[in-house]
Amino acid sequence: MSGGLAIGARVRVRAAFPPGHVRTPFYARGKAGEVVGVAGHYADPEELAYGRSGLPAKTLYRVRFTMAELWDEAEAPDDDLVVDVYEHWLEPNDG
Amino acid sequence: MQHLRRHHDMGGLRAGPVVHDEHDHAPWEKKVDAILRLAAAKGHLTVDELRRGIEELGPGVYDELGYYERWIASITNNLVEKGVITVDALGRRMAEIEASWGKP
Image: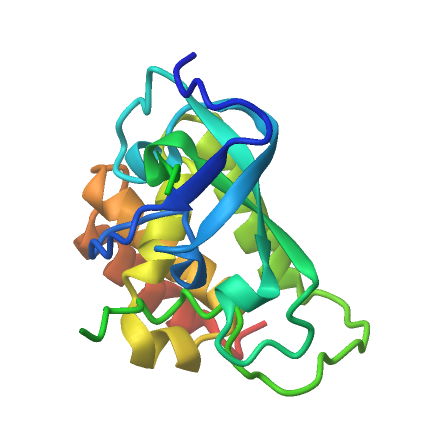
């Protein structure tokens, strides 16, 4: 298993907008959050979607964002949202 | 720069109140579910390919079709691409069934 992000790690979702099948919601891309858990290790669904093996398996992280980070006009800006994000969509956010 | 949001990726968009009505599935919808499970068990497609096929229907068709209509459209396209069925055989079978409608 790759990945290697620790619980509590500050991350940013890659701001990528490819045309194909992706599992990272549009609203989370480019946003900063915190790793709060590991949901598991799975064959990459973005490869499985095209009939390929998706192997080696990738780590699916649980990443917490504040509503204020996700939405410009959040109704409850201090609430959290936890999104499952695959490792290849995450970058360290040390800044 | 305006980034491209694909049509199906609509999380967070305003969509009005959630309808909580319970409803039964029509027999054909259950059949679509069974076809997917069978095709997946035989290794013809994954749920990920199903999902990809639904996303590729595009905005117009995506909105016009119902939930299981989107499923069967994607299943059909996937099975044709994989060579499990042919468009010609499918067209002939559909015509056969349509011709039998209304007959005892």
